[in-house]
Image 1 (cartoon, rainbow, N blue to C red):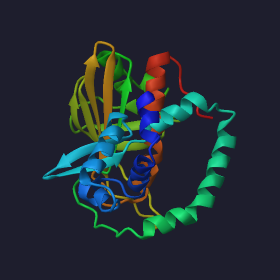
Image 2: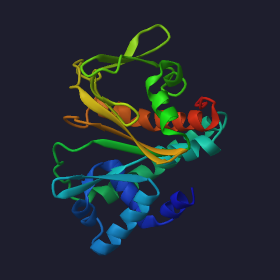
Image 3: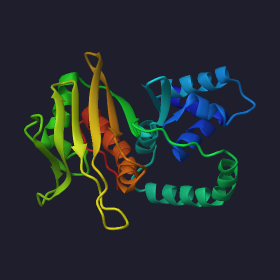
Amino acid sequence: MDKIFKALSDSSRRQLLDLLKEKDGQSLSQLESKFPDMTRFGIMKHLKILEEAHLISSQKTGRFKYHYLNTVPIQELADRWISRFAAPWSTGIVDLKSALEATQEKKQLAKHKEEKPMQNKPSQIYKTIIQTSQNKLWEALINPDITQHYFFGLRVNTDWQTGSDISYSNESEEAIIQGKILLCEPKQKISYTFKGHKNDTGNMDADSRVTFEIEELSSNACQLTVVHDEFPSENTTYQNVGNGWPTILSGLKTYLETGKPLITK
C-alpha cells in the first residue's frame, strides 16, 4: 500500500499513468517523447517505481518493451475506503472534477504526436497479489460455486480440456461470456478465446484471448496475472472488458482473503 501512495505522489508518474490511460501499450521511446525536459534514465526510474507498485505492467515483444496501465490496485483502494453508500457521491464528485479538467487535459494531450499503434502485442495486462495458496487460487478460478462470488454473479462452465467450450452463465443459465479453451495447465495457466461483443454497427467484434497465469510467491501468497489480448483494435469489446477486469480481480482478492464477496453496490 505504501508503494502505491509513493508512486502516486509524484506528478510525473501521475502523468505517465494518464498517458497510458489515453493510449495503452506504449514503449519507453514513445513515453520519453512526451517528456522533453526529462532524461531517458529519469523516465526509466519513474516506470520502475510504478511497476514496483503494480500500477503498470510491462511485456517485451521483440526488441521493444511495452507498458500497460494496471488499474487493479486503484480499484482495491476504492473498495477498501469507499463504502457502497459513499460510492455514488464519490463517483459524482469525480465525474464533476473530470468534466472541469477535461478541456485542459485535451490541450495537454493534443500537443503530443499520435504514434502508430504496434501490432500483435497484448492490449490489457492486470496483476494482483493475493494472500492465498496456489491450490485455493486455482480452485477459485475453475469452481463455478466460487466464480459466482466475484465474477459478476456468473458461473464458469467447462471441462477444461483443450478445444472444449467455456462459458460464464448467469442464474438463468444464459451464457454471458463464451469461448473455447486454448490451454489449461493445472494450478499454473488457463487460456481461452473470448467471443467479441456487438459493436455500434450491429456486427460482432472478432474474438480475442484471455490468459490467467499464477505465480506462487510463498506458501500463502500468489501473483495472478490476467492478459487480455489479440484485439484487432480498441473496439467495443476492448472498451467493455477494460471496465470489468479490475472489479473482477479485486472481488477475487477480497473473497480469497476474507471469505466474503465484495459489495460493489
